[in-house]
Image (tube, rainbow, N blue to C red; front, side, top):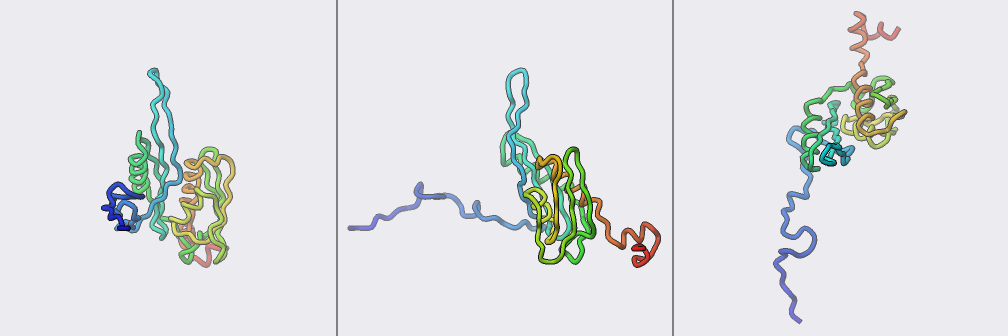
Length: 187
């Protein structure tokens, strides 16, 4: 029995597609992104419901820079792209201790969401839920303890986490604000 030769066109999974479309490339500037929420939303008008999609994305370089953004359009890919663009515009720098944890405990608040962020010993890992964990991973935090209270809506939880990260100060920053040396600022 002769073996059948196939050209591959129209057969099997991914036939005729470029392999590049399935690869995930690291961006040239080193900033990675992760979609943390994707929802279908509706605006009710006189003529009926206008459906669109809202994407919430977190971006970060893994070395202390992180940002969140949201995009709202009628199509999912364009909503994600808008969210990425929005998040890149809102990047903030956070201080890291030994490139692995945060300098001190802090509460972040946004509307009905509250997030407790606590530094952790080496090897602890990221003890956090999906939204807060994604932000910590992309920020470059490797050891942290977190607790979310109140609303767990991904968008408000992400903004509460970013509020907490914005409040972080190093010992040197506190000493400079008090016009003291770092060893005197502890007393």
